[in-house]
Image 1 (cartoon, one colour):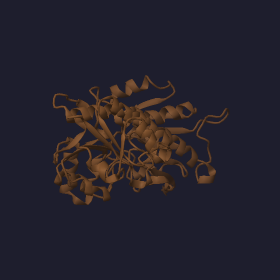
Image 2 (tube, helix red, strand yellow):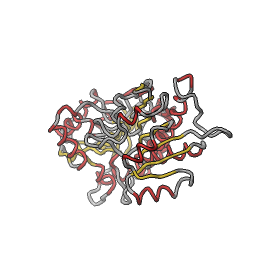
Image 3 (cartoon, one colour):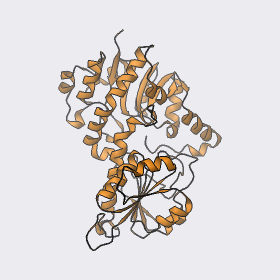
Image 4 (cartoon, helix red, strand yellow):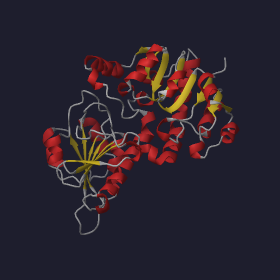
Length: 377
């Protein structure tokens, strides 16, 4: 039986991206997949139905796109309206963030859906390849957004987030040194700022330090170091790998009180629960303005890459395609096992199988008040 795949248009939050552009679709076609694309899927990126057809895809309606193949791909998880299509044995991959989308995951369970979340694709070396591009974009945008918010016209400190001869360099603190944190730190350092990066693991922090300029100080997270470095920071970027219901506080409210009025905190982790940064209590998604807590501006945007939808979609398509082809091969060929996509599976024919989701849901079911709705969703 010929393998098939269906590429869906995005409907949430006026998102103009699509998970695969025509060049990504071409990789599926070249790998022997009958490839279907929902009409208008690439319209927000200037990719026409004709462009997809030229890459070898068959253009179908919305209803057909959801039902013509047992293997479905989206950029973001299905909306409430799209759940009507999640009622049959199905393999679907998207950015699900299942720990903060309790009701959607319960729907997948009820209707025997097998689901894979891009943030859980883990390579054999421990990296998360499908998070690389959007994480890097978010990290770099955090510096650009922070630079704008520090302007006098925005109510900021009135400083330029870059070095100028005769002026003390601004200070940027980055918590986390993965794809997002690393991108933020390198961007800030390239502009000549004083940069401090925090991490938990000494060995991984040492490896990271070898990839950045010697001027970037890399420190192990502990309360004393945070208390020493954060109060005089002009910009703090929170970029830990994940923040969930039981993540301990790192940047306390008392620490925020000690920061300079007009300084900026940008949370690109945007987990669920109070997490490591409890003063970032509200989302600023989709371009919503920042808010002040104790005189400090807060951004908490879980969909920051949508602000540069062309960059985000182009990078994702070129990066994701081969991984999603391998996922498709594992679905249609029992003899082909793909480790990264198997580790990304969080429901298997309706059963929750990913340990992180099992842990999150155990906490929710013990304390239902934790299920407050998603940041990323």
